[in-house]
Image 1 (tube, rainbow, N blue to C red):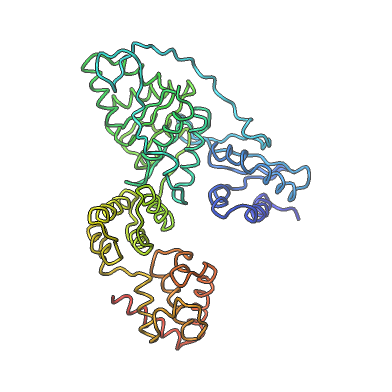
Image 2: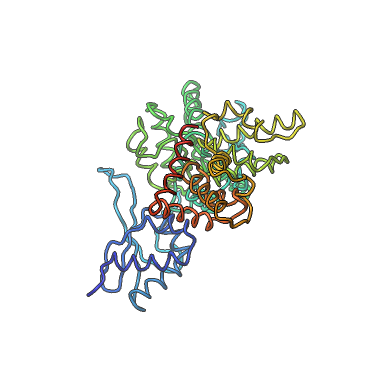
Length: 476
């Protein structure tokens, strides 16, 4: 019985999963679906040209070997790529490309339209009357890739940003739309791309501008009858970074002018980078023709960072400022401030300022007192420290023994229940939990949690113990 395309692809995935990191598998292979199997040709669908290029550049060897293992030496792979282009229906279409083993050579490239730069264009960012087109990119030098911590929350956007910085206007993700909630690092990442381009290609004309600033400049150009200079200035750029494009909502004339600037840049092979608080499909108050262009390239979201990433961000901040804080203080801040990076860094700045001004070390108790305005419901928080204390009191065992290497039955039981409840009632990772309970690794935590779950199902007395402790946790 012949296998279906789905069965063949699932078999491929099992091999691929064993050969690459789990996060890479989730990012680059889970979004793929199998479409058809015709003879020895397997067709898979990928969500964008960016995925196609990335797979061909980084995983083509693995894909080729895997497909041939499933289909024989004549086995081949083809991609069906979803491409969202402007059309009368506004719906995406697909295009097929073979896996050629040499990167994304099969993609056709549009010929750039030459742009002549008029040196007498008025620059809206400098003092009126200064004629020379000497462009200050308006970038914050502190926003770089080096201090932009990578995590599961931003890996796709950061990878795309690197690709754009290496080859602005020369990739399929043009425009690059970076979107996400407040304080998640959109502006930092967008400007990091600009700074990297200027560092490696100083002759490139790069400009960063907020949407609000752009709108104000447009209004000023209308008042001063310099609209042509305004348009020519932006059309002369090699890279435009437009921050907060959701602020275009309701501004029809400004949208119209940006539409024409965008078209010129895109057709000229220049790079456009956009940020927004929402995905293009969720933006309201923008013309459909402009939205369709925002969808041409890659839209990458930034999510709330997980605990490990938050800890890494705080440690990076401490290192940059040359200050050390106890690990439990860093853990406390990272655990309790999980809304966005901006709040997280604000809390750390407050702690560092107090440490410097008062010339004294900050312990956990002082940190809790100082950060009560940042952290809500501090009196009701459940920490690993509190869970450990509660469990030890319940079983009448010394707290310090739980973190020791002893194998006494009552101590091991208290430790395993503490680990199980820490996993259930805190946001700490398995690695963090293991480290807290005596420097153990994550596999020990997994074993402890499984042991507790098995005993809950088979031992009524043990189940009653756990339920009693959980009731006390809820009452705390």
